[in-house]
Amino acid sequence: MLNVKNWNHVFKLDPNKPLQEECLTALCESGTDALIIGGTDGVTFDNVFDLLERVQAFNIPCILEVSTMEAIMPGFDSYFIPIVFNSMNKRYIVDIQHQAVKEYGDWINWDQMVVEGYCVLNEQAKVFEAAQCQLPSKEDVVAYAKMAEHMFHLPIFYLEYSGTWGEPELVREVAKQLDQTTLFYGGGIESIEQANLMKKYADVIVVGNIIYKDLQAALRTVEACM
Image (tube, rainbow, N blue to C red):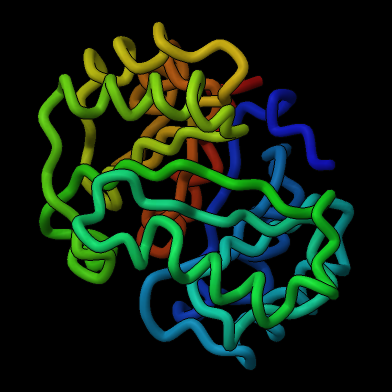
């Protein structure tokens, strides 16, 4: 099973966004711990397969964050299965996962499955609307973290600000609740200074959007974790 506890930094690639070959090469050779392939909309079998095939030329772990069953395929080192704690619809907490296990349970390699407890904190994000989320209070977020650690024993708790800069104090408070569960932070990291700040509290920082706006700035965030 993939050991995320050894990670500090990952890049998240959106299969629905074009990425030139030299850019992908720079990301794969940057020193980041892994690449996560995933997105909210426009994720298809074809564009996921294309990105996977290109990444396989490099010696770096590649993970599929499963957002649609239509894009599931073999060949990834691991599969991240999100459950969205602050969704108002249990479809995004247990129903989709249940459906997948019913259909593919006999073929699943359970050692490759990693469940991540998501808490989506940007009301303007596509994923917030798509997963029918409600904005939690700080107390709610801390309680979700405690549930991830003590009730569900999840390997990952993911604070997802999805393109916007989050609250370092909340990340610090959440980090205090977690011991066995690894804290991922994603959202708005566009500089080495921001990466340094969030890395003080989060175990793993996830860098995504800036890849497509300023590749060099994205690459510099790796330095914060070395």
